[in-house]
Image (cartoon, rainbow, N blue to C red; front, side, top):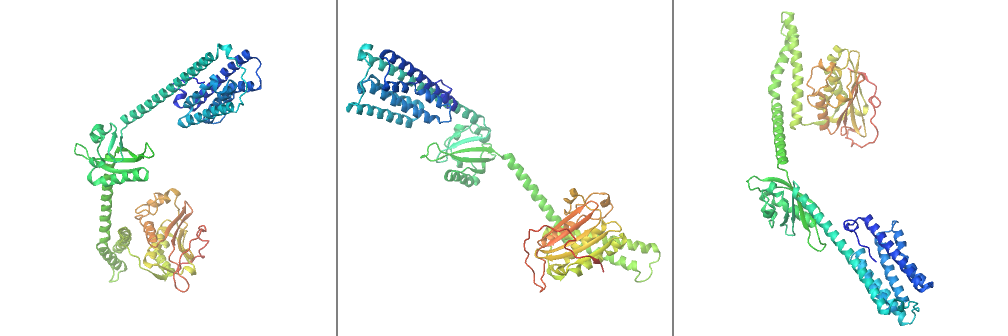
Length: 589
């Protein structure tokens, strides 16, 4: 017994609607079965045990309708309903005359109703169930095991009248099944047409070009976006291969993308130039992915092509700007590196002659003002030479012309020498300098000149930004991780936000203290660069009002007692604050 499905609801595949439809069909079967059972009892009288089973089978679909309220999969319930239907027809046929029963014709409706519940497998299973029930009835009749029928055909006008009524009921049921099947097919066709229209709408209005390529990569479908992108209508693209559209120099890249997508089954991307009738090639990004309609058929390719001409123009402009900036930087660096002799020679003369005049080596200058002027010339020349040396050294490092000459030397001797360079400046500012080099770090392996320059730069900054009465400390120690050299002060300190600026060439921290101090901002940048050339790192620790500590970690500089270099070992220990590993300071000589 079938109930006509409503187009556009359950037929469209809504799981909840399909479950409601199943419940309605089973409820209708149960009601019809109950009415038939009451009519049978009214005509025959009180049913016996076998007839009670038949009546129970007629109302059993009500149980399936209730089970549809649970989480049991719908396909299982549908198969159970069809099996129950086939078994019920067989049982009723056995009670009403076996193969001569007018209900035998209803066996043909079981696979027909299965067509509404599922596809070909469901129909086959229903046909097998109906055939099995029919064979059981025939077997019982052959062995004479059929129960005696209490149904008298004379009550209905003879057996042929009963057959006519049964066939008529079967025809009505077949009409309902066929009508429901047509409604479902019509709804499926409408859904397919609606889906096709939706996809067609998206393809027609998409700004990107959508193409479908066959196994030979020739275009089988193209969206209208081809007009804006390639200057050709979709019809003009049909049958063309990518080689007919792409720039010859980019054909290999596009072919590789199609091969990767077709052979590996993965999406692939290629950026190529497409030819345009205007003569100007368009840069496009084509994304390919395989799409197989049949598991046995060769996979087709669906490609989405997007115009990236503007993006490519921007990338080209950025590359040109970068190359120009790098060329300018290289030219500047090469110029400064090559100007070392030209800049230093006159400054050396200025400094040398002004020193001779200041010391009055060849006799008195005369007026005291001349001596004061010569002293100022000497100091200004020395300061200018320091600035030029810093710029030239940074330029050499950037140009890759700064070579390290590493050797084993006495670090304490170099530290004392660096302290003497800033001693006069420290005494004028009332700053005390202390040195503490651990015995394990007394001898290290590094570039002696570079280490001296790093210490001089750090000490100069420390003395410069330490107020009168403050202390600047130099310390070093060595362990299995290498050598650490630290320069600390009790100066003004640096804020956390300004720490990020330090170490960049020509960058200085802005503040009331720094505005009154001269410098290029290259000191710490040189220290970081030279430390990096040694395979190490420079770490700055500072806080406003508490001072600053700069740690130079040189992992390859440690030397053993026997004069051999030590291989650095990694350690997970936390960095100790300055002073916890550095020996007590001693007064600078």
